[in-house]
Structures are given as structure tokens and as C-alpha cells.
Length: 258
Image (cartoon, rainbow, N blue to C red; front, top):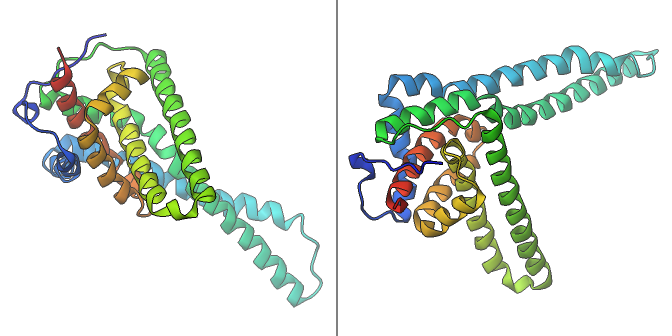
């Protein structure tokens, strides 16, 4: 595995602090706006999400609603027919809502090819050396190991914070900020997954990089975590996160490379 080192002016040695991580978000937005190829690729996750949402909505009305109608008792008066209609439409609305959240979950995975092209484009402009292709299965295994490690850590940490909050209610002013900090780290970990998986960096290497660059990673994760709280922003800003993560990963790896 070849460790990349970016050589452009943007990744030249210099301080990488908390606000450098925060600034990665607006810088990535500006880079997308001024780069035609990135503008085209950045709309893919949103288009995938809208297509899936529309498809699940149509299925909810045409299939789920009809499925429930044939199973409800046949109404014999106007009041009963109105009740059946309300129940069928309510069921369709619930199915459509479930489809909305399913679309949110599926859109990032189905947009992976576009996100990988975004990362490759940004790495080229950052001066990073070409990557050695790992192949689909090695990339998948690398990503899954990283995801599993992060999930275990998040589960243990969040469970501990919850337990402390229950047993010691007075500790809430401490556990709530720590929970927010944990959320910022997990968002940063998830966004950095795109460039680091393509480079073949495993869980331990990623953990070492994050610990060595904790301030900039925290600022990076906090900025995107705040935006991701807004409805649908987790999909709309996904390409922005990929651009920012690719730039940040190039800078971090350049500073840590031997």
C-alpha cells in the first residue's frame, strides 16, 4: 500500500487547527461552484434521493393503499366508506414516510461511483499521486472493517454516556457536550471514509491519523454535523463532504507521511 502525500500549495506544511476543519465546508462549496465537473457530479446524490422518494411514494399510493383497501371490511354507508378511505390514505402516507427514510439511507450507497469520481478529481487537483486500484472486494472489506470498528466504538461510548446520565443526572452538563463531540467525530469519520478507503487505509491507521489531527478533525466534523441536522442536508451536502474530506485527507497524509 502506498501512502499518499499531496504536494500542492493548499496542502503545504502549516497549522491545521479547529477552524481549518470548519473552513473546509465553505471552501468545498466554492470549489464545487467553480469546477464544472464537480457541479455535475454533485447533483447525483440529490437526484438519486428524489428518484427513490418519488418511486416509494408512487408505490405507497398504488400498491400499499390498494393492498389495505382489499383487506378492510366493506363499508355499507357513507360514514364507513369515509373511514375506510382515511385509513387507506393514512397507511399510504406512513409507507411513503418509511420510503423517504429508506431513500435517505440508500442514496449515499447508490451514489458511491459519483462520490469516488469527486474524490479522484479533487486528489488530482491537490497534487496527490495516483492511487493503486484495490479492486471492489478489497475496497469493500476495508470500508466494512472501518465501519464496524467505528460502530463498536460509538456504541460503547454512547452507552457509557447514557449510563452516566441516568445514574448521575447532575452530570448532564458534561455528558451532553461529550455526546455532541462524539457525533462530530463520527461524522468526520464517515466523510473521511471515502478518500481513506480508496487509499486502502484500515481502521488502526485511520484512528492514528484522527488522534494525531484531532483539532482539525473535530472542527471538520462539527461543521458538517450541524448542517446534517437540517432536513435532507445529509444528502445534498454529501458531495461537499466528499470534496472537503478529500482535501483534508490529502493535507493530513502529507503532514504525516515519512
